[in-house]
Image (cartoon, helix red, strand yellow):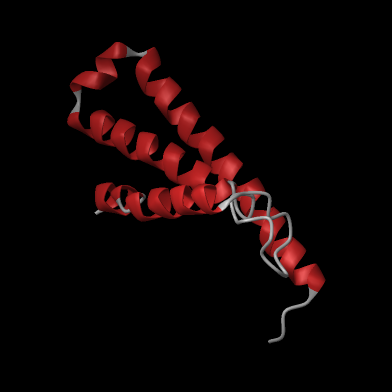
Amino acid sequence: MPSTPERAIALSILPHITGFSSMFCSGLIIFDIYRDKRKLKKLYHRLLLALSTTDVFTSFTYALSTWPIPSDSPNIFAALGTQATCTAQGFFIQASIATPMYNA
């Protein structure tokens, strides 16, 4: 399927919405666990806390979407970054393997 400008825009904007939504919801889980200190005594809640914490970082990385891509990249909507920001985002996306590891 050939890429169209509308598709490029949608593929750039949707990760902002889903990524920030995921960050917010994981933050609510973290808040709920810390609100009741007794929950930290249970292994289940500690694992959920760790999973939610890694998910906040992973979701943030995905929520950045095309922003960290170098601005001189052709045919990329909303590319605002530099080579350094692109490399940093790549590193954190690779480090986000921690989230599915906690799920397993």
